[in-house]
Figure 1 (tube, one colour):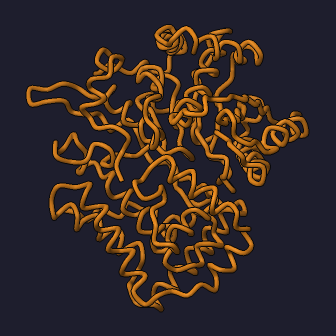
Figure 2 (spheres, helix red, strand yellow; figure 1 turned 90 degrees about the horizontal axis):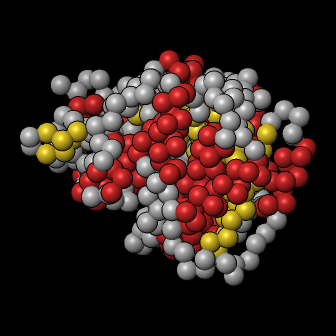
Length: 451
């Protein structure tokens, strides 16, 4: 698995060709406003008309608005209500209820059947309007549109950007991107995002930690797959493995990767990077981080060096629906289909959403674990990492981090590690701060011993 585009593709991008090596604006609302105005002015007239229409409907952002949490939703009637409640709980626990909002883009393709997602969002927003603002955007893309994911993400941010310009500003604007199947978010995350960006003006993006449905992680192979992926992705972001330290390292993965959920970024960085690339079909979430690293990169005598040091991990957990990940492991398939592909992703999601969570969880808890299941997961993980790093030392370093995360390979050690991890994760889901369980959740710097 790789990012949507290669470095050379970004260097040929008309916007990024003129926006590499950009300096930080220092969280200056006036400078941020100028960057956003320049970005929006470069958009196609039809796009400005679309975003402007929604901006007019919602009105200007309040001068002290700090944070917009946005998410995409297709047919998510079964999941969208709990997701919105989880996001609102985070905003309330962060003390940002009146200085933030949730923006839902309800997107669909022309000619496809729609469920009650939009009606559920509208009713939820009305019930909770006293303590949180939730807005709904409904958009229909052409039936043949294969880039509806980046278009929908771009629409959410560009509406917010347009509203930002429509009134005075007293503080910079930040964004959190989420998915509609998020089950819970660690309390206080939104406050951390605002504090971190305010305190460190060089930061462009923050990436939190990803969990899948905790009941499904009772299935040992899925637990091993998820825990080793967390460890490997963290290790791949070690500063010593990034493009600034060695030009052969993978442009997509040797950094803090921006995902589609539990990720925050600044409006400044988004505008300077030119927003989402609307010609990609899949991994559009990673695309924004790649654009930012090109925007912050520089040309040298030996070539172009991306700038990856403006993106950082944040110690906050979030959990999404794990049925697709569980189904892929049980079936021996890829999360995103055989290619992987957009069609594979859509089909796998639709198929596994037909399972009830109760039945899936029961199957996970009582599922048969083949004797070689863990070995197969680790072999696949090693193949994936080997494609991301150019040398044996780096590969062993990353895989050592995965091994440490598991705490052992024998059945009893894995089972003990699974029980310990899930107990800590469930405590965080119930409102406990994850800092107290950081070592159990394997979030400490696991690669500090590398020479």
